[in-house]
Image: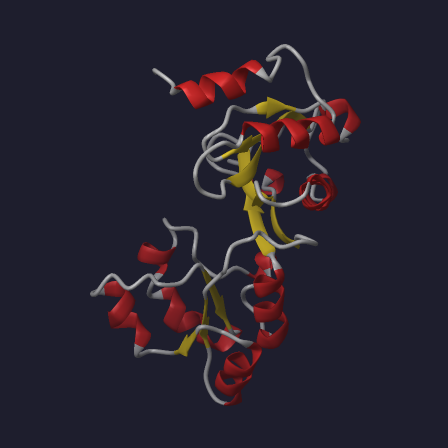
Length: 230
């Protein structure tokens, strides 16, 4: 795959044989984010677990102290007094059954996170086929199935992100934007890593953090020293 000159110049800053500590990695990622837009800084974490086993699933959510740098649109499925509560909390869209055909038939997806009260999960369940593949299905572990819609919406707007294993046992998460300070990115990164280390399944054997790579949207990956993270 041929890379552009900017990428090649950025790649020269990084020694592929070195595993960097957090401060160095953050600094290198910021220096190598040279695109014309504000690149997202992401972390990719390969874990020593087998997500095919229910007892080795790693999933949850964490509020990043400095947010993600992205405006998050929240859809809340609620009824009764929870509708007004969700609206007051700043939800972008609130509704019930009437949203089903809009999402199912009209392909309406102008939202980034879906929250639902438990009594609405029967309705939301009908959207499993369309919300599931997009990673939008509300889940109690992520705090998106709850009666406390105020807290759920506030946390998401403040920078709450969900982490979960993909099919290859890797977690992919944003930890901010290239425009963030190095301290903000490092704080967010440490908050996420702390949550993932805490979520280590009891049945996981051997090395838990196999590899951790920090990268910007268009930049090269920077490997971190996993021994210093655990």
